[in-house]
Length: 419
Ligand code: EPZ
Image 1 (spheres, rainbow, N blue to C red):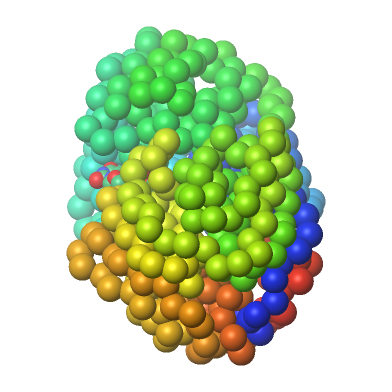
Image 2: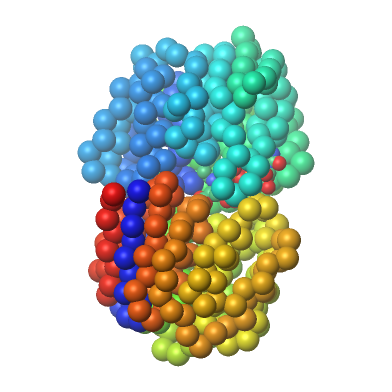
């Protein structure tokens, strides 16, 4: 269990380099087992979800080494095609190993990742994509069994742009004979990143970032090197923290094109934003103004992961800020906790309405999911007095690498202890 103690009321000042992206490195790590090769990844963030992925790779028979932000995976001797429930449970998105294991071994058995704090996490689109490639898929008692002596290229039409299903389809399609076309694909920057990595592994693939991805073939390379992209949601987290606590912060390394919805929204709320190719600066000298309607959509729409973060940034913004959450049903869990700080939030189904208040007062809060936990930390920075964010399941450490130290370096009075 982690306890984050925060003394609010101190503006954030300084510069910060953004960590490697959680939602980019997880599918890349899964893909390393697609063929027998030696991979070296750099800028790998220190996250619980990364550790969970490395443990799965070790279980499958890979040699895995980690030194600082460098991870080396030697998958030449991998030999297992099953992932036990205990390892699958360690990470919400462990289903991302399905395509790589099936593509490598012609079979895969893993347990359903189950629901999570955000609500049900169905994987029907993942399984349908594997079946389109010729796999026989059975699902019973929470276990998935897929078998495909041979995978054959196919047209995979995704009825909704699922990030994970797109990634599983891209990875498995590399092992298929013939061409695969994925239509209705997710367009997130992490999809483009995965295409880059699979190309580095030897894939003949293009279209990532558009709705249609084509995989023509795969000539595996023996040695692969890759640097993980910066985390656009970690960037949004620090920007929203500065919007809530005030100050002047410059982010380095992140590509602002990946989170333009967030920077545009903060600018519309009155933050002074300076956006350059790999630098974003935010200055907030006085309270922001509300009036925005923030509707989460698949990329390039406003990212669902940044909705709780922007909600925290809007708590003291004069006027009303309206949120519409279209991706996950359980994405307003932080509202009840934010009210303990004195926030005025009304939730009705997929809509939430925030009316800005003059003052937030420190309180004892409970983190119940990754981005919801981050939103509590952001709000506590902008509250008067001391707050404690109790994170019994270590949700925040799943996605943030040293967030406490990074915020402290910017002037926040924050201390995280492990109990
Ligand atoms: C990825 O989750 C991210 N996780 C999430 O980030 C992110 O919120 C989400 O994409 C949306 O951008 C990783 O990349 C590891 P989806 P994923 O499949 O792939 C429905 C965070 O905080 N759906 O795009 O699981 C699903 O219920 C995490 O970093 C199906 O119906 O998301 C949801 O409503 C949280 N059937 C919608 O699609 C399926 O088979 C989008 O889900 C799959 C998904």
